[in-house]
Amino acid sequence: MKQRLGFLVFLFFSLSLYSQQNLSADELFQKARTAAFEQKDYPTSIALAQQALQQSPDYTDISVFLGRLYTWSGNTEAARKAFSSLLEKKVQDEDFFLAYASLEYWNDQNSKAVEILDQGLAYHPQSEQLLLLKAKAETADRNYEAADQTVAKLLAQNPKNTEARELAVKINDLNAKNAIGLSYSYSHFDKQFTDDWHMAGISYKRVTPVGSVILKGNYANKFAESGTQFEIEAYPKLSKMFYLYVGAGYSNDVGIFPKYRTGASLNANLPKSFEAEIGYRQLYFTDNIWLYTASVGKYYKNFWFNIRTYITPDHQNISHSYTGTVRYYPKGGQDYFAFQAGTGISPEENRSNLLENETFKLKTFKLGAEYNFSVQKTNLFSVSAMYFNQEFRPNVKGNQFDLSLGYTKKF
Image 1 (tube, rainbow, N blue to C red):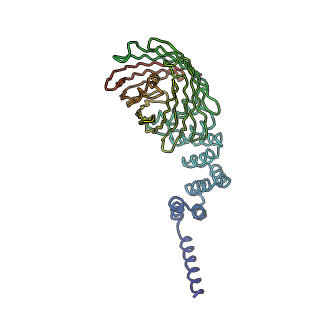
Image 2 (tube, rainbow, N blue to C red):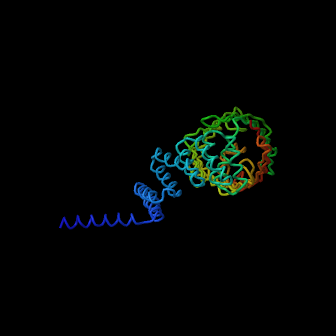
C-alpha cells in the first residue's frame, strides 16, 4: 500500500513537472502572476518566472516582474542585480524605470531613485507615474523646491491626479524654511454684543528636520477691552505616516483670551489619500474646559473633504460641535476655494472665549467661505467670511458676521 501511494505521488509530481516544462513563456508568466497576486506565494512565482526566462531570455516584462518579486520578497541584492542587467541592455519600458526606482525609494535611496526616474522621464516625459514617484523621492530627500516643480508639472498635465494634489499640499508646507504671517479679523453682532470685535495676529514659522515650529502673538479688542496672547505650536514627525500636533498659549487678559490653552493631536497620513486626527484641546479661564477632537479628511482629484468634531463632556451632558469643509484646488497646493458649514463652537475659532460661561452648550449654526491665492509662490493671501447664528441665551438667538484677511511671506 505504501509503495503504491509513493508511486502515485511520484507520478503526480512528474506529470506536473512535465506539464510545466511544456508550457510557453506566456503561460508560465501568467502562472507566476497568479502565484504572486492571488496566492502570495513569492518563491513559487520566482521559480516560474525564472523558468519562463530560460525559454525567453529577452522577455522584458518577465524580467521586470522578477525584479519586482525580489523586491517584494526583501531580496534587494537580487532585485538590484536583475534591474541593473536590464539597464545595461538599455531597456526603455516605463514599467522598468518605475519598478527599479520604487526599489530604491522603498529602501531610502532617494537620490538613486531620482537618477533612475530622470532616465525614464527622458523616454517618457509625460508619464504621471514616473513624475509622481520622482516628487515623492525628492520630498523624502528634503529637496522640496525640486519636488514642488515636479508635482507642479504633473498637475499641469492632469489637475485631477489625487495623489499629486495631496503631495502638492504637503510640499507647500515644507517648501520654504521660514514664513511670517499677518492676520486680521473683524466681527459684527446684531444682538449679542454692542461693540464690534477686532483681532490681529503675527506669526513666525520655521521648518526644521523634525517638523515645523510656529510662534504666534495675538491682539484682540473685545467687549471694548483689549488683550494679548502668546502661543507656540509644533508639528513633530514620528514616521512617514504619523506626526503630532502640540500647542500651548498664555494670556494675562482673561475674558479676552483664555489664561492658558493646551492641545495635542496624533495625525495620520493614511492610504488611498485619507488622513485622520484624534486629540484634545484644553482652555482655562477660571475653570478648565476639556474638548476632545477627531477628524477625517480625504483628497479626491481637485478636492479635499474634511469632517471634524469637538466633544465637550461635563457632569450633566455632552456638548457636540461638527464642521464640514470642502476645498477646491484649481492648480497647485497653495491656491484654493473653501466652503464650510457646521454646528457648535470650536476652540480653533477667534471667538473661543465664548466657551466661557458655558455658552458652548447652546445651539450655533455657521456657514462660511474662504479664498487663498499665491503671488510668485512666496506671497500667500487669504480672505474669508463666516456667518454664525447663535443661541447666546436659552431660546434667544443672534447673528454674527466675520471677515478675515491674511498674508504670509515665505522665504
